[in-house]
Image 1 (tube, rainbow, N blue to C red):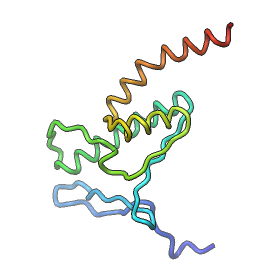
Image 2: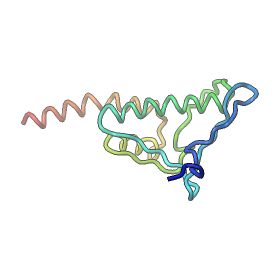
Image 3: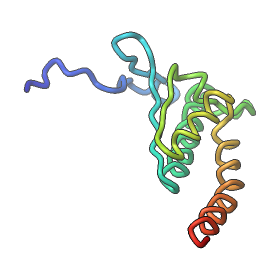
Image 4: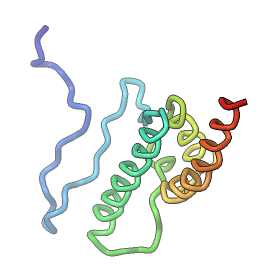
Amino acid sequence: MSTENAQPTTDSQPPTSQGQPELSLQTTPNGKKLLSLDGGGVRGYSSVLILQAIMEEVKKIETNGQDDGKERKPCDYFDLCGGTSTGGLAALMLFRLEMAPSAVKTAYEDLAPRSSASARRSTLS
């Protein structure tokens, strides 16, 4: 299979005059931007941590490194989101509830001890 006509998954842009790359997202053939999140306990949590770091980089690019005090939300940049297991829960919080990644991270930290304790009790009964 030839890769000569293959499209990159993201647009590579040269740095701006301030040294920051331009922000550009590659869309699907129908023009939609899709975010997919992994799941399975800590993988779902790590997906949120990585997404939070990405959104911080987006903010730096958009503001030329100046903090405008606004956290960027993935729902403002992607059209669709899906995930498996805990990634699906994150997708719901990020897109249906329009939560910021930091709020999803806090929810995970709050829910994880309670859900794992509940799971231990149910397997011991």
